[in-house]
Each structure stands twice: as C-alpha cells, then as structure tokens.
Image (cartoon, rainbow, N blue to C red; front, side):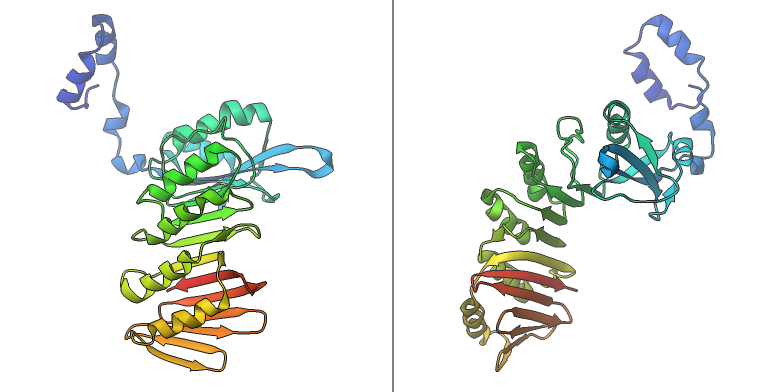
Length: 307
C-alpha cells in the first residue's frame, strides 16, 4: 500500500480489523509503481456459437482484438488483468478460424458467462443476441449497449428491449424473427429519439404502423441533426399514402412528379420516390436514401438511409 493515496488507505482501513490492517500495510502496491501505459484497458470482442453438425451440439468461442482480428485464447488470457469486452456475439453459424476453442455447456455456464459479466465494459458497444436463449444464465445487469441486435425469446427479451428503447445511449437497434405486436409503438418512439442511428426489423411477420413513415419524413424535413440514419422494416402503408404525402409537402419543398416518380427537395437535401407495378422505390441523395417494396398493396417494406 506504499503508493496508495492516504485518504483512500484510511477509508479502506476504517472497515477492517487490526490484524487485517497490519497485513494490508505490508502489501507492496506493484500496480501503482508501474508505468500507467502498461495498465490501459485491452479491448476485445467475444463470439460464442453452437455447431450442429453430425447431430452433435458443440459450443465454441473465440476472441477478437480491437481491430476485429481473431486472437488466440492464450493471448487474451495473458491480458486478463486489463481485458475489457467491447461486445458479444451469439453467432448462429459456424465461423472457421485458427483460434476457435471448444467448450462444454457446463464450462459455458459456470466459467465463460461469469467471465463475460465480469469483463464487459460498463458502456459496451454492441450485443448480438439472436440465436440462443441464455436469459436465465446470462445477466449483464443494467448495461445498455450502443448497438443491440435482439431476438424475442421470452419476457426477458421484452425487458431488454424496453430498457434500450428508453435509454438515450442505444442508437442502433435490430430485431429479428417474430415479435409481439405490442412493441410497435415503442419502436415508433425509438425513431423520435435524438441521435438515433438505425432501426432494422428482419421479419416477414412484423410491421410498423404508418406513423413510422411520417415520423421519418418529418424529421428529414425539420431536424437538421437527423443524419446518418437507416430504417429497414415492413410498414402498414398503402401507395396512396405516398401520393397524399407528396401533395401535402409541395408547399414546403421544391417538388416534382413525373409519371411514377416523386421528388422532394430542400436547400440541403432531396428525396426521390419511384413507384412501380409491384414496388415502391424511394431514393434520396445528399442526406437521405430510401428504398421500399410494396407487398399486396398494404405492406411497405421500407429502407431508408440518411447520410
């Protein structure tokens, strides 16, 4: 404890017995004496997946460094004292590299998951949680990820989603497969959040209300900070909505309609919409690119990019 600040040392000792204090005072504080450069956090990512080949379920995992290059287990463990996990992938497909390490279900539950929970950053960047339900074993506390890719398994999935939708930290959200319809309006509110980067819904059975369409375009017109944005989702929207919306915005923008093409333009950006027999394609240059496909004339599969 020779280099520990006195106020910290006294605060610790106030809670200890006399014998413990004597022992503690003889501990040489090597960490405080070393070059601070050697104690910077080492950033890693971890991928965990199952292999279902040959009717056998095997678990595998591997680490990647801050440049997303796979590294050996031994290399990562050598950095364990300063290792911090930036993100976790629960991968669905077999990923082949030289640093893959096999692990038993017991090792996953009793060693790897606790390791993840201990070393995960307090403000982690991403979680890809789309393939295995580990909700009863994998608890990352109240952490909120900057980017979340999530599959619905149970009520825990809904709790995770709500926490991220309500948080100012989560900027990118991706949902896969089937989700309860009751979350639709939560996602519309997510689109209203300042700083939102993307919302992607990869499902043929889930669609957003038409309000999502209008929220995006309202922000496109009125919010100068609404940039670098992507929306990909099916939307309950009929083609006449697009025509009506075009007419409504003529007074606010320089608009043009030619055959099946629509174009809106402001001083800083423009939006181009193209209608086809089986599709609605929306494109914009400068700050907004939008592409959508119309299914059965009532579902708009919508892709938007603000750049």
